[in-house]
Length: 93
Image (cartoon, rainbow, N blue to C red; front, side, top):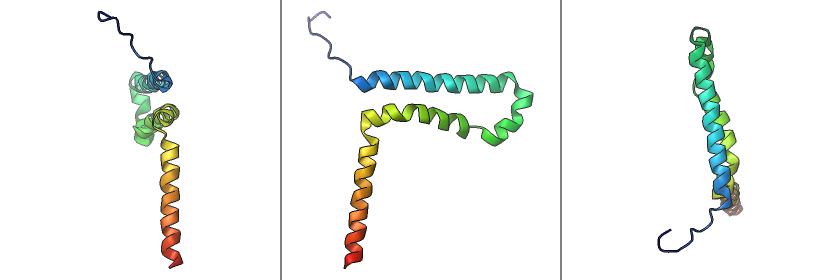
């Protein structure tokens, strides 16, 4: 760099997110490539699984990295505990 400043290191979760994104994109690319390649025979597959099957598989690949980056499980557990506490407080009255 011209000013001599060093770039700060990337967070650890960033590399996992990039790798997961590439894996999910490759999965979708292979699914749709095979679907288009064998098109007359894949019409029943498209009728049954069209978008939800490859997208749900891609989300399963991405979820661990997203959870590490945004602490999704901790946030959901905290919300669930708060809702249960509110529910219990309302029923105790």
